[in-house]
Length: 257
Picture 1 (cartoon, rainbow, N blue to C red):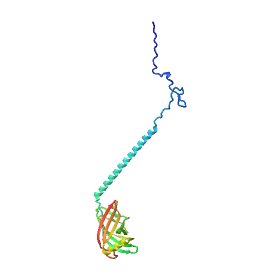
Picture 2 (picture 1 turned 90 degrees about the vertical axis):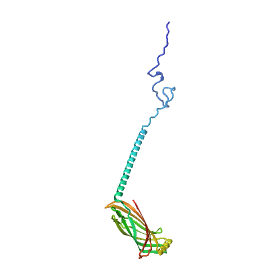
Picture 3 (picture 1 turned 180 degrees about the vertical axis):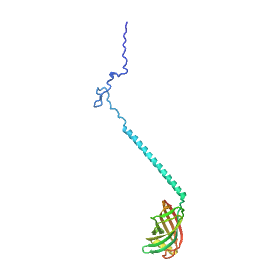
Picture 4 (picture 1 turned 120 degrees about the horizontal axis):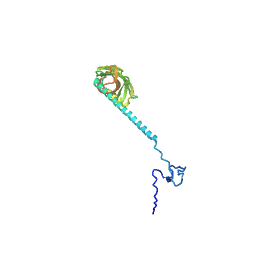
Protein backbone atom coordinates (compact mmCIF):
# COMPACT_ATOMS: atom_id res chain seq x y z
CA UNK A 1 0.00 0.00 0.00
CA UNK A 2 1.31 3.39 -0.85
CA UNK A 3 0.57 6.58 1.19
CA UNK A 4 0.89 10.04 -0.26
CA UNK A 5 1.81 12.89 2.11
CA UNK A 6 0.96 16.45 1.30
CA UNK A 7 4.07 18.42 2.24
CA UNK A 8 3.54 22.16 2.24
CA UNK A 9 6.06 24.18 0.34
CA UNK A 10 8.84 25.80 2.41
CA UNK A 11 8.33 29.37 3.48
CA UNK A 12 9.58 32.07 1.21
CA UNK A 13 12.98 33.05 2.66
CA UNK A 14 15.25 35.77 1.41
CA UNK A 15 12.66 37.26 -0.95
CA UNK A 16 9.52 39.26 -0.36
CA UNK A 17 6.29 37.39 -0.75
CA UNK A 18 4.66 38.48 -4.00
CA UNK A 19 1.29 38.34 -2.23
CA UNK A 20 2.28 41.16 0.13
CA UNK A 21 1.77 43.70 -2.58
CA UNK A 22 4.15 45.87 -4.54
CA UNK A 23 7.28 47.25 -2.95
CA UNK A 24 6.41 50.82 -3.94
CA UNK A 25 2.96 52.33 -4.18
CA UNK A 26 1.73 55.54 -5.73
CA UNK A 27 -0.16 58.09 -3.69
CA UNK A 28 -3.14 59.83 -5.06
CA UNK A 29 -4.04 63.45 -4.38
CA UNK A 30 -5.88 62.56 -1.15
CA UNK A 31 -2.90 60.50 0.18
CA UNK A 32 -4.67 57.15 -0.47
CA UNK A 33 -3.02 54.19 -2.12
CA UNK A 34 -3.62 54.16 -5.79
CA UNK A 35 -3.83 50.35 -5.92
CA UNK A 36 -6.98 50.05 -3.83
CA UNK A 37 -8.91 51.04 -0.75
CA UNK A 38 -7.69 48.14 1.38
CA UNK A 39 -4.53 50.02 2.38
CA UNK A 40 -4.74 52.82 4.98
CA UNK A 41 -3.85 56.37 3.98
CA UNK A 42 -0.18 57.20 4.06
CA UNK A 43 1.47 60.38 5.34
CA UNK A 44 4.45 62.12 3.78
CA UNK A 45 7.85 61.44 5.39
CA UNK A 46 8.87 63.70 8.28
CA UNK A 47 11.14 66.63 7.63
CA UNK A 48 14.80 66.30 8.46
CA UNK A 49 16.48 68.44 11.14
CA UNK A 50 17.40 71.85 9.87
CA UNK A 51 21.13 72.06 9.20
CA UNK A 52 21.01 75.86 9.16
CA UNK A 53 20.01 76.09 12.83
CA UNK A 54 22.84 73.76 13.81
CA UNK A 55 25.38 75.82 11.89
CA UNK A 56 24.00 79.04 13.39
CA UNK A 57 24.43 77.60 16.90
CA UNK A 58 28.04 76.69 16.17
CA UNK A 59 28.70 80.15 14.73
CA UNK A 60 27.23 81.89 17.81
CA UNK A 61 29.37 79.67 20.06
CA UNK A 62 32.51 80.73 18.19
CA UNK A 63 31.49 84.41 18.45
CA UNK A 64 30.97 84.11 22.21
CA UNK A 65 34.38 82.49 22.64
CA UNK A 66 36.00 85.34 20.68
CA UNK A 67 34.28 87.96 22.87
CA UNK A 68 35.43 86.20 26.04
CA UNK A 69 38.97 86.08 24.71
CA UNK A 70 38.93 89.83 23.94
CA UNK A 71 37.54 90.59 27.39
CA UNK A 72 40.25 88.53 29.08
CA UNK A 73 42.94 90.32 27.05
CA UNK A 74 41.52 93.72 28.01
CA UNK A 75 41.42 92.78 31.71
CA UNK A 76 45.02 91.57 31.56
CA UNK A 77 46.13 94.79 29.85
CA UNK A 78 44.29 96.91 32.43
CA UNK A 79 45.86 94.97 35.29
CA UNK A 80 49.35 95.38 33.83
CA UNK A 81 48.74 99.12 33.32
CA UNK A 82 47.60 99.57 36.92
CA UNK A 83 50.64 97.69 38.19
CA UNK A 84 52.98 99.85 36.09
CA UNK A 85 51.38 103.05 37.38
CA UNK A 86 51.63 101.80 40.97
CA UNK A 87 55.31 100.93 40.50
CA UNK A 88 55.97 104.36 38.97
CA UNK A 89 54.25 106.15 41.85
CA UNK A 90 56.20 104.13 44.39
CA UNK A 91 59.43 104.95 42.56
CA UNK A 92 58.61 108.66 42.56
CA UNK A 93 57.54 108.50 46.19
CA UNK A 94 60.78 106.98 47.47
CA UNK A 95 63.09 108.76 45.01
CA UNK A 96 61.82 112.34 45.19
CA UNK A 97 59.95 112.23 48.54
CA UNK A 98 57.22 114.78 47.59
CA UNK A 99 55.97 117.04 50.38
CA UNK A 100 52.99 119.37 50.61
CA UNK A 101 53.88 123.08 50.38
CA UNK A 102 52.95 125.36 53.27
CA UNK A 103 51.33 128.80 53.19
CA UNK A 104 51.01 131.67 55.64
CA UNK A 105 49.35 135.10 55.48
CA UNK A 106 52.00 137.59 56.58
CA UNK A 107 50.37 140.95 55.83
CA UNK A 108 46.81 142.11 55.37
CA UNK A 109 46.53 145.59 53.87
CA UNK A 110 43.19 147.37 53.46
CA UNK A 111 43.35 149.76 50.53
CA UNK A 112 39.62 150.52 50.40
CA UNK A 113 36.61 149.53 52.48
CA UNK A 114 33.15 151.05 52.48
CA UNK A 115 29.74 149.97 53.79
CA UNK A 116 26.53 151.45 52.38
CA UNK A 117 23.61 151.09 54.81
CA UNK A 118 21.08 152.06 52.13
CA UNK A 119 21.46 148.91 50.00
CA UNK A 120 23.35 146.78 52.57
CA UNK A 121 26.37 146.51 50.28
CA UNK A 122 30.08 146.34 51.03
CA UNK A 123 32.84 147.41 48.66
CA UNK A 124 36.43 146.54 49.45
CA UNK A 125 39.96 146.28 48.09
CA UNK A 126 42.51 144.21 49.97
CA UNK A 127 46.15 143.25 49.35
CA UNK A 128 47.17 140.02 51.07
CA UNK A 129 50.81 138.98 51.27
CA UNK A 130 51.19 135.20 51.34
CA UNK A 131 54.41 133.32 52.05
CA UNK A 132 54.64 130.05 50.10
CA UNK A 133 57.28 127.51 51.14
CA UNK A 134 58.35 124.64 48.87
CA UNK A 135 60.07 122.07 51.15
CA UNK A 136 60.90 119.55 48.40
CA UNK A 137 64.54 118.88 47.60
CA UNK A 138 64.14 117.91 43.93
CA UNK A 139 60.61 118.92 42.94
CA UNK A 140 59.71 122.39 41.73
CA UNK A 141 56.18 123.81 41.79
CA UNK A 142 54.65 125.53 38.80
CA UNK A 143 51.69 127.78 39.67
CA UNK A 144 49.42 127.62 36.65
CA UNK A 145 46.60 129.77 35.34
CA UNK A 146 43.05 129.17 36.54
CA UNK A 147 43.45 129.83 40.27
CA UNK A 148 40.84 131.59 42.40
CA UNK A 149 41.00 133.39 45.75
CA UNK A 150 37.75 134.23 47.55
CA UNK A 151 37.30 136.17 50.76
CA UNK A 152 34.06 136.13 52.73
CA UNK A 153 32.38 137.08 55.97
CA UNK A 154 29.88 134.77 57.71
CA UNK A 155 29.06 132.95 54.47
CA UNK A 156 28.75 136.11 52.34
CA UNK A 157 31.26 136.71 49.57
CA UNK A 158 33.10 140.04 49.79
CA UNK A 159 35.62 139.89 46.92
CA UNK A 160 37.83 137.70 44.74
CA UNK A 161 41.26 137.55 43.14
CA UNK A 162 43.81 135.09 41.75
CA UNK A 163 47.31 133.86 42.41
CA UNK A 164 50.21 134.97 40.19
CA UNK A 165 51.59 132.55 37.59
CA UNK A 166 55.20 131.61 38.33
CA UNK A 167 57.64 128.73 38.91
CA UNK A 168 58.93 128.03 42.41
CA UNK A 169 62.25 126.23 42.63
CA UNK A 170 62.94 123.39 45.08
CA UNK A 171 63.78 124.43 48.64
CA UNK A 172 62.45 127.92 47.98
CA UNK A 173 60.36 130.49 49.87
CA UNK A 174 58.37 132.99 47.82
CA UNK A 175 56.19 135.89 48.94
CA UNK A 176 53.31 136.76 46.63
CA UNK A 177 50.87 139.65 46.88
CA UNK A 178 47.27 138.76 46.05
CA UNK A 179 44.95 141.64 45.13
CA UNK A 180 41.33 141.07 46.14
CA UNK A 181 38.53 143.38 45.02
CA UNK A 182 34.77 143.23 45.12
CA UNK A 183 31.41 144.76 45.82
CA UNK A 184 28.51 142.69 47.09
CA UNK A 185 25.27 142.89 49.02
CA UNK A 186 25.62 141.15 52.35
CA UNK A 187 22.27 142.01 53.91
CA UNK A 188 21.38 144.30 56.77
CA UNK A 189 22.06 141.69 59.48
CA UNK A 190 25.57 140.86 58.23
CA UNK A 191 26.37 144.51 57.68
CA UNK A 192 25.36 145.31 61.24
CA UNK A 193 27.41 142.37 62.59
CA UNK A 194 30.44 143.43 60.53
CA UNK A 195 30.15 146.96 61.88
CA UNK A 196 30.02 145.57 65.42
CA UNK A 197 33.11 143.38 64.86
CA UNK A 198 34.92 146.39 63.42
CA UNK A 199 34.21 148.46 66.51
CA UNK A 200 35.24 145.56 68.78
CA UNK A 201 38.51 145.06 66.89
CA UNK A 202 37.76 141.41 66.17
CA UNK A 203 36.78 140.77 62.52
CA UNK A 204 36.65 137.10 61.40
CA UNK A 205 37.25 136.47 57.70
CA UNK A 206 37.39 133.33 55.60
CA UNK A 207 39.80 132.94 52.66
CA UNK A 208 39.37 130.10 50.16
CA UNK A 209 42.07 129.34 47.56
CA UNK A 210 41.88 126.85 44.68
CA UNK A 211 45.06 126.55 42.63
CA UNK A 212 46.16 124.15 39.86
CA UNK A 213 49.82 123.25 40.30
CA UNK A 214 52.34 121.31 38.26
CA UNK A 215 55.05 119.27 39.98
CA UNK A 216 58.22 119.36 37.90
CA UNK A 217 61.74 117.96 38.03
CA UNK A 218 63.93 120.35 36.08
CA UNK A 219 62.07 121.25 32.89
CA UNK A 220 59.95 118.08 32.91
CA UNK A 221 56.53 118.33 34.52
CA UNK A 222 55.65 115.06 36.23
CA UNK A 223 52.06 115.46 37.32
CA UNK A 224 49.34 118.08 37.74
CA UNK A 225 47.65 118.50 41.12
CA UNK A 226 44.99 120.75 42.63
CA UNK A 227 45.55 122.50 45.94
CA UNK A 228 42.63 123.67 48.09
CA UNK A 229 43.45 126.06 50.94
CA UNK A 230 40.93 127.11 53.58
CA UNK A 231 42.14 129.86 55.86
CA UNK A 232 40.25 131.44 58.75
CA UNK A 233 41.86 134.62 60.04
CA UNK A 234 40.87 137.28 62.51
CA UNK A 235 42.02 140.89 62.04
CA UNK A 236 41.62 143.86 64.36
CA UNK A 237 40.43 146.41 61.81
CA UNK A 238 39.29 146.99 58.23
CA UNK A 239 39.98 150.73 58.20
CA UNK A 240 41.80 151.86 55.02
CA UNK A 241 45.33 153.16 55.47
CA UNK A 242 45.69 151.62 58.92
CA UNK A 243 48.15 148.89 59.76
CA UNK A 244 46.08 145.78 60.26
CA UNK A 245 47.12 143.25 62.87
CA UNK A 246 46.43 139.58 62.21
CA UNK A 247 45.25 138.21 65.55
CA UNK A 248 44.88 134.51 64.64
CA UNK A 249 44.99 132.18 61.65
CA UNK A 250 43.98 128.60 60.94
CA UNK A 251 44.94 126.73 57.74
CA UNK A 252 43.75 123.58 56.05
CA UNK A 253 45.65 122.46 52.91
CA UNK A 254 44.37 119.63 50.72
CA UNK A 255 46.21 118.31 47.64
CA UNK A 256 44.30 116.29 45.01
CA UNK A 257 45.36 114.67 41.75
